[in-house]
Amino acid sequence: MVSDYLQERRDNKVLDSRIVETEQILALMPPPPSDLELRLSAAQLDFESARQEFPEPLNTTGIIDGILRIADETGVKAIPMVTQPWTVEDISDYHYSVFRLSVTATGTFTRLAGFINRLESAEPRTLVIESLVANRITETAEEEDIVLFEARMEIAVYARPALDEE
Image (cartoon, rainbow, N blue to C red):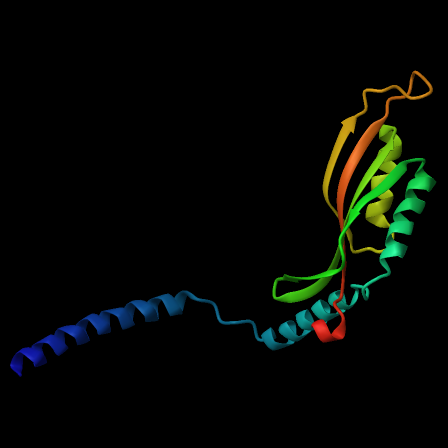
């Protein structure tokens, strides 16, 4: 019984020293900002506003037609190779619908650069070029002075999921 008492007394001394250390650490910490709740509320509103910028799932034919139209306008030959159906992906605890496709585009370096730039800035604004590999084509074009390049791209278009998927 005395040994139990002595053990508890030693334990209390250890706990007392830990309490003193913790109080010293807490004294060094600055107080939280007084407008923390207001800042959190504003951040949540900004986040929801940004999330609403994601479009509803789009017509896949429209997406492909838009890519082909941009290719035509920039003087590039583009061929959508492989498409996948819309899928739902979890990103940072949120669900997004994603449409993926592979595109091969051929043209001069300048025209390919213009095509890629237009893809990144055109609608839908949630189009992302996830992978791009460009190679010089060894065959010459009709005019001897023109060097052609081929760019293979993996593209993803993000959208809000349908309501029943959220």
